[in-house]
Length: 231
Image (tube, rainbow, N blue to C red; front, side):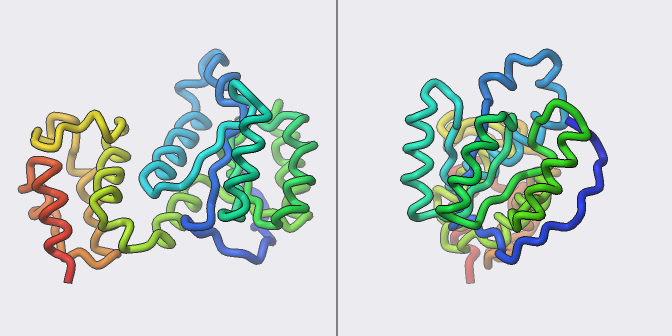
């Protein structure tokens, strides 16, 4: 994936929303098999946006996984209620053929330009320019996760499920792996993660501080404290 490319601003006129989005991951099986891909910026961005989608309960579809037809059917079902299709992964000739058909169903298509793989930098830039000329969105993974955070419903962010998944996102583990009574620091919940969580929860109406969160050692205690702090 090319690095530090400056793309022209997206010309699309619609605003991303977490409640309207479907994250479409393309060709993950092939990507994972590529030499050196695990340490790449591309894979880092894919993991970040996937974790954020899980944390905000955003539907995800894996195209070109075990069953392409099943993936397309699943995407069609989601698209009827979530019109914003967010694409990341390996950009294949087949995907380029499918996109115009999807565009006829919804104009709200976005490509995450630092989380896609094309054969070389020139093709990468040409394809993004082509999408922009058609009025499709493109943005980087940082902007995507920021807009998803800002548009997520406060009642979900501060729900038991929302708090649990936000913590799991910071720990980069499955939510079911967290013992609700264990010390969260043993899972790696550090000061950087706490600062991030405090920012999200305060923005959604929780009256919490860094010191308060640090003092709540278990998941069970933390969920109760955050929810009790809401004005």
